[in-house]
Length: 161
Ligand code: AMP
Image (cartoon, rainbow, N blue to C red):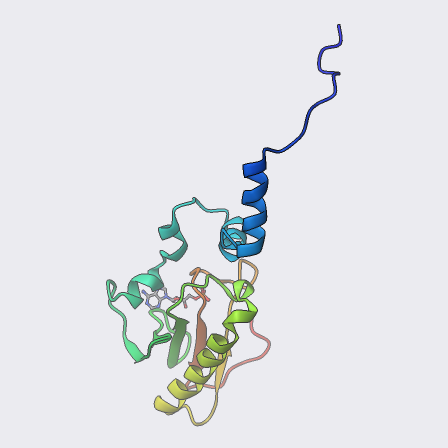
């Protein structure tokens, strides 16, 4: 007997081939979304991508001491401040971390930095301040929504721990 040793017919059905070609041509389904899903290794429910504590703060479902808001960004006081002034600046778009930022987010990233500058001026940090972005586990990130820490009101030490 020659079980399992026969030549396998490996031709793909035409509709499936057409589907693959149209995915490639029309970017369907969204390759960014798929890459993000693979990176996060979370369930396939779209809600879970966006659902963090900070999403709830953006939607005003959780109270926060908001110091600045516009269409793209929100800034609020950190609940566990590490300096006399400790602000978090976040994009309203739910990007999990700096490592997930893509080239099309360039304008948004610029906007976040300008928001940092604006908020620091607004809060009177004329003597300087530190901006920190923790990204991923080794970076010490605890909330999976991109955020920029503004730390000010005291002299900062270097290197950080
Ligand atoms: P990271 O460790 O870089 O992810 O920073 C997350 C920050 O979010 C920490 O500094 C926390 O103190 C802060 N944080 C967590 N929950 C809240 C909240 N409900 N309101 C304000 N800040 C928060």
